[in-house]
Length: 458
View: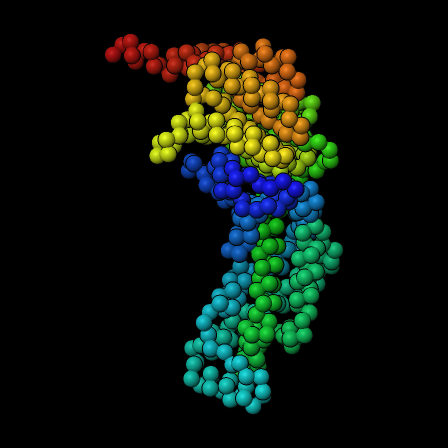
């Protein structure tokens, strides 16, 4: 399999062909971990986990979404299973218990290490007599660990969870095997304070003999917690689980919106090998950039294996996702805005040249140069994008003159947004239409904002 190009190494350091790679610019554009505004990032939006460990697992999943269809489907199946049996998963050990067990496992506490009954008894007596405060912490830690194990036993004993699917199946199977380890057999179904001997024997089991087992049980709890959060977001937002299809790279969506936009207007997406490039036009504020973000965000969520904000979403997984929505120059390193644009296009071109399946979105590229250069560069890039098999592109532009030349180029679909100029004000319906926008509203917006009046009268 091809290796990851250097342009994406700053986001994911992996040669794993199962991973969808997003570079730092794309992570920034989609606000996956950091939001440019006062709103939440996509991670914060999805983070309905109950435990800190679950939040870490969710972040790891969001840092490394799948590109392998089987891995995506396994996560989808787990989420669908959770949604079908959601009340049963309330039996997962609470965040408090998991946190206390985690703390107990890492807290520096004295421990009786002797195995011989006589030597163990003497050590236990000495610890109880000389370290009363530590002994109380040990007892609480051992009791909480017992509670965690008992909660997991009850969780797995529920009839409705007897046949988990997807990512849950190996997690449940491993958990059952760990809980069946012989040293856990003596844990009572009803907790009790116990004698000093009994409590310190349990402590010895948990912190010496089965320390790795407890750590692994906690990790499995966190992985399930992350899956529950993904399922809860899917349900709470009314998202739909996508259909994973076979064949050349394609994406089809109906009723697509952006999860952060209130009362968003839904639109469709059709990208396939007959129409590899969507050429998008329309005036400012009409919805072009939001549409690009909505598409990229939904595609990203689909690769995570969770639901997406659409009424229907079907896709062939890709290997690289690029966006170019919020570029800026770099004064410190002497990179002008146009060079930043050129480097962005180069990153996409390098991924294509390396043989990856690529989805790339570019919002009004080549703004950093003159109109003639921008026209020529856009035309040359669009023609080359359209010729690349198993790649898909969205390209927004104000250069509506390009449409006259694009009509002779195959695999390019032209769509536009427009403004309604009636009643003396601009209004937007945010509906995608076939064709190319001919609206030129720059002067109209300046007039509507009273800019010329301010300059002429003062």
